[in-house]
Length: 254
Ligand code: FPP
Image (cartoon, rainbow, N blue to C red; front, side, top):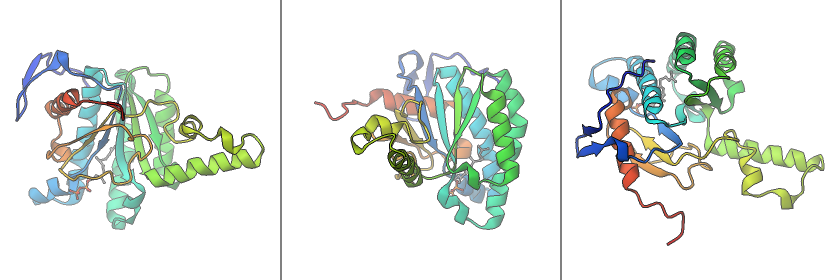
């Protein structure tokens, strides 16, 4: 991953000119990377080609975060529901992920990127889990962007898992019902220790959460772009930040 993004202060997006230095940059951005299949279909290519192109956009998005100062990037790479896709597509995605982890770890080391993952990781095939664990351990000391991959991830499943842990603690007598509050709950979810994302970007136009970070996105701003994920590049990231910068965030207050 090379951070050779041009140091432009003003860029033209489809809608307007973006004044880069005045952008609000959230500490944590989450992305629902949608549209790989449509991207491939429009080109008469197999879906696998869309997913491969999508993996390139992952690399570019991490570069954008490094260049802009976003500290955490959580990417919805494989949902709990994605296990229900045809077996061949699941295998393609798992293979892509394994290759990505193996190929990109040296670049992550060079670029100071830390890898983390959230989800029911024990459901991943052994070869993917091994590559994931290795990359997480190798990059653990890096202090730049944290790329957090949501894998075999579901927001409801995460809430169920956190609840189970609290019940286990209660059963052991470590906590009582009075100890369960927003803070103790947030300490049991997969993203414990990370700030909640302030911005959710979803590509390819769909307007739904699709079981993603249901707890963490409570107060996030949502930016939907028509761009398909394989086409999502730095200027699209800037356009999303520009939209975010214009939002009036009130957190329920007046
Ligand atoms: C949604 O597109 C995307 C996914 C289900 C998987 C996301 C995977 C990648 C971006 C590539 C691999 C990831 C890494 C981290 C290497 P879709 O297939 O649902 O598209 P469609 O809605 O147009 O059919």
